[in-house]
Length: 99
Image (cartoon, rainbow, N blue to C red; front, side, top):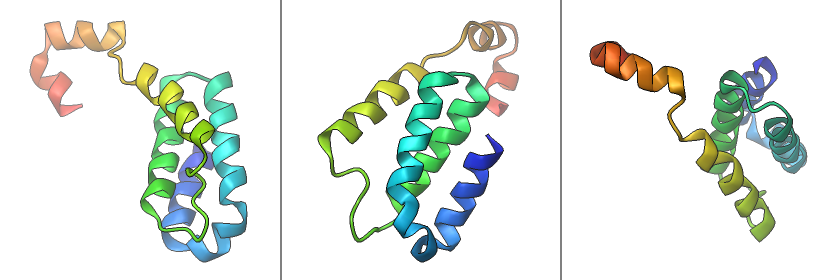
């Protein structure tokens, strides 16, 4: 997750330097998310993909249909509330919203 956070920062500030590697970064994050579906890794990985998607690149790493499908395959399952989230929502709705 630290690597994804660093790459997110790098993509927002140094996109020209990252441009030759952006497609490789996107693929690496997809592979990581497939292997490590933990919440922390998923959150930072999806944050990186969001940052890359918001940046204008000469050749978008998301133009390929398989790339878009891979994002959907990873993002949609991570949008579900976890059992711990539901429990917190029932026990303390204000804390759930604050989180």
